[in-house]
Image (cartoon, rainbow, N blue to C red):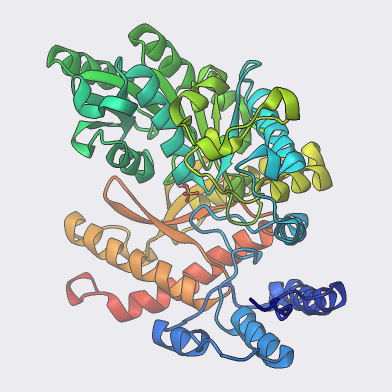
Length: 502
Ligand SMILES: *Cc1c(COP(=O)(O)O)cnc(C)c1O
């Protein structure tokens, strides 16, 4: 056959790469410059967003000017800004600046961090990073370690898969969950729903997931947990794991880690900790005591993309014994077989988790820690919690607000209560109206664009929820939130209040 001619349209040379990347970096710089003045949220009707961004894929290359005009409008017209100083919603970090730059480099280098041979430095960096998290940050023993995952959902899933495979008592990987008694796992009612999803994905079934009630501080009731385990054993089931929350998503509650570790040791259960939100707070000396006993966990899930502020996405699962991940995920694939004594290659992370091809997620986290240093992280995390306490104190003292849950970690929940509605009305009617009013108020504040809280329902009460995992947020934004919430609360109240409450 004829010798194929080169086809180079996709093989851009370094100058072209530079020219293209420069435009992206210019846009990023413009974004960072304008960010504080942009509306953090606004009304973005989905059909308008779709019409604007879902453009047809062209047959021929789009001109740079046109392409970057398009990207500019994606950035400035059709996005919302979790890195804005006024963003204090859900648990979503702002994205570190060095992390974003590192992500460009990681993509440019394009390592496949599933196999050591495809990612020598990247694999060793990921292992060093997870060792730092396991040993230095959480105090797990030598031999512990972990992997970076897409996020907290996968991190919890991987930890709980190791739990299932290690504690079931038969080979679930080969025989399936039907190979023995029904498995049961435990968590509190406040535990994030991804553990429920993990029970589903692991074949345990959500009916075999016991949601244990919480105490008045939203922590798991140890007495009820013990009873549930005993009842399941009596019924012939096989309890295998307890999920402890290190920072619940609604209120920041931390379950009693030492008590859970004691119970799991007595009952021979796997102790998994969901620290997706709260985990990084162990870096802050003033918050660390809340987590005493976390170093006794068999596995810990946490999210650098939350309270380590790094860009999405990147979660992390740590295990007390790295061998448990290999046991849970190792498989035979002849084409990756290598004589490692000869090649001196290291560990393949693709054999220690659910993914084969993996990106260099670790770099943005690693570079953020290197560029900022541990000390700044410790102080900023502590500062976030201080801001939540400041907000709680101000809301508590404010005549228009009622504190719904005290500040724990960096979360605070409160609600707007019109001053003249305080007393003298039917409590049930009043409660229903306040729920409606506060639900509407959260939406109004989010659409207003100055600050961006989210919502929570605590013991049936609708609240405005603030969660600060944002290094650009300061006391000014706490003050502004109360100002905006009072202003928009008054407006919504005037519109919504039923006749019988007037
Ligand atoms: C966010 C969160 C999760 C889920 O993690 P993702 O990174 O969103 O997948 C799980 N548990 C808790 C406590 C969380 O805050």
